[in-house]
Length: 163
Image 1 (cartoon, rainbow, N blue to C red):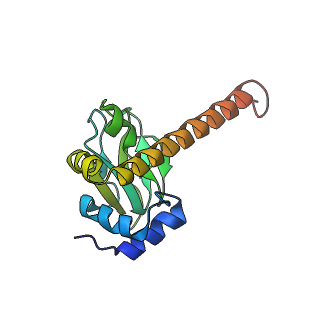
Image 2: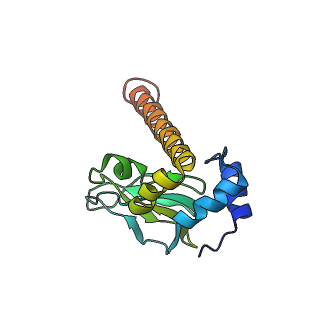
Image 3: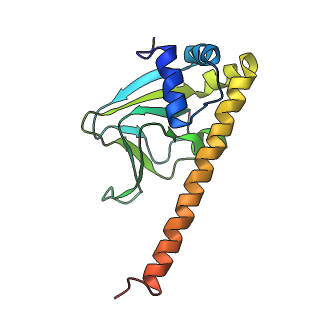
């Protein structure tokens, strides 16, 4: 049982532009496929080397991404309203980054597991396609931001800001 109502989840989707084309009735049906998980600050949500068995909608808090080095240096983060874990979930390759809760009050995530997604594709194909479209948008945003970061680094290294 989720702690969020269908109306609250519908509003969350609308406000965060996630699955915003789903109707309230469709969101209510989607809820049967989701699991709610809470993570305390510092707790690992997904780890390096794991193959994704779920993807998540961040309901509250911030998720920090760290690389494989021993120092656990942050390389990015995602806030409330983000989709996480989608790359490994869909390409079924091991994760390159560790994702952990970094908010003082922890992180609340709605998880969609692979078995539930497989059921969703058969039982509610429109909802499954909507989630897939949102994954594409999420990955597109990631690539665009990565491109902006690479451009900024290039400007820093080859001119502006380099001392």
